[in-house]
Image (cartoon, rainbow, N blue to C red; front, side, top):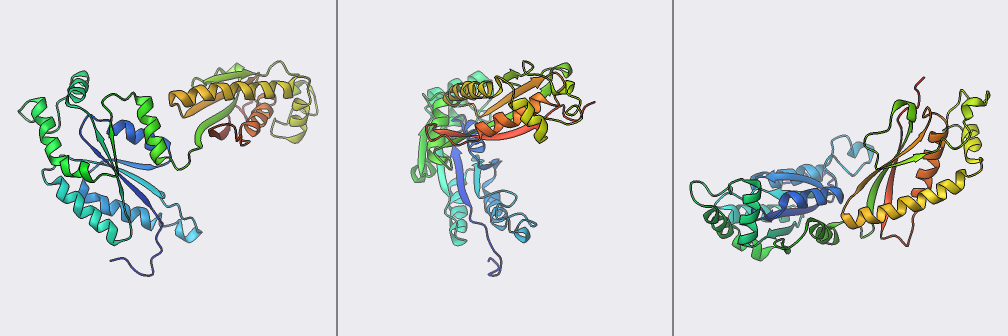
Length: 311
């Protein structure tokens, strides 16, 4: 029983269940990108304890008024399904959760026998329940175990003919916290003399702007300082470049969204990574952070300055 004086965090719980080979691993990654805390391959006996941990939150968070906790308010559990009495165990878990005020949703992933056989043959792995029998016997045994679970699921998704992108769209539509999804964008300043960032998807070269290094009163400062920022952004072409580059990022991001990519890294470079690139990175990040009602997603922008502080 819960301590009546204990304050609990409201937690949404999603149980991801399905036949082996139907895409549970792929769905776990999609849910993680959509902001869920994902626990993979969890035995049913541990689910209730995990939910209790999520509801209690981080031990230090409650004292600070932070309700997010260590796990967070949305917990997705990819459940291990090999036990013969799995359906009974799951029913018991759902009953325990309801008793503490948590009603979990169940997502069931299925696929045709032919699709499952093809996928197992592609990865050259046996079915978890195959044992010394055939692949089809393993698939049939698991279907028998999960038959009642599938019937009671909140959402059943057949992945037989789905591309990874289409599966992502279905899961996001059903379980993303907001229909206006986020694209995570890291904007990073750097100095060309120290080399290009190896993880940059796009690179902006701002060495066409006059270098504050050659202005004695600005040399010791950097692009985060107001005097350097005003100098750089006041140069001919600086704001026009930012406007055009913001549009370029938007066009690229539209393609990322269609392809299911959720992360973009933009490198903004000058010679040493101290003045121009820092000021332009901050300005570009500010533009990208502005909400755009015409876009079906928004940017979650993070700023980094790789070479700031180097001599």
